[in-house]
Amino acid sequence: MTTLNLPNHFLSLLSSQVFEPLERHLAIVDLPEGAVLYRNNETIEHVYFPVAGMISFVVRLADGQLVDTGSTGSNSVAGLTALHDEATAINDAIVRVAMKAAIINPHILKTLVACSESFWLSCIRHEKMMLVLAQRMAACNAIHCLDQRLVRCLLQAHDLLNDTAVPVSLESLAQMLGANRSHVALAVRRLHKAGLIDYRLGRILLIDMDSLRDESCECYDAINAHFRRIIGWDPGRH
Image 1 (cartoon, rainbow, N blue to C red):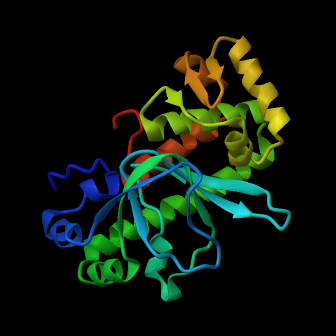
Image 2: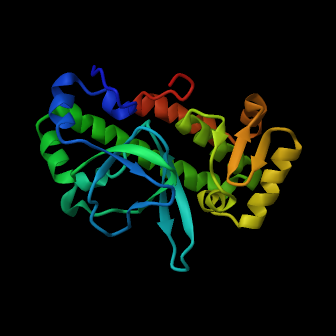
């Protein structure tokens, strides 16, 4: 394995033979909250390996509403669909929490991946995980109540950020949950009143993790089981 100083799960599992040629082409960038990394049907200019922060993959509806299909952070990678023909995005990717990332030109990455079967298989696994995540999120949004989905969302953010302080606004939460902002605000107040979280403008502090896990829908545990099985990432150990 690499002795990588960049805490990205995808990169950390690459062999030194694979990582060393890749490292020469990586650049480190800081990305602010709200930055759009790429848009649906547009060419992906960079592939992103987050080392901090959080990215949401979203579907933009005709009325401008954004609905999340999943999020990633230092556990994975964004923009792998650029490895396919035309490097066209199939969704929008938006920075939810300001982040640092290693980036690479997708054409260079495609050349490197073509030289290593293990590298290609790693990319396939992470793409599969994003597909599984999107499917699970669709089922969760259709079936589970807003309070359960909010808790699931906060727990996932905690895992990706490795922090009990989640710096997200009510507007961002509403987009992530595909819900009305006022309804999300009421759900946040209910959790605050129950003593599970503390809310300040643009920041949610998770106080009672055990109770939050009990309040979440089944999707939180199901998604984490997929993370462990498909890409070998365990939120409880990272």
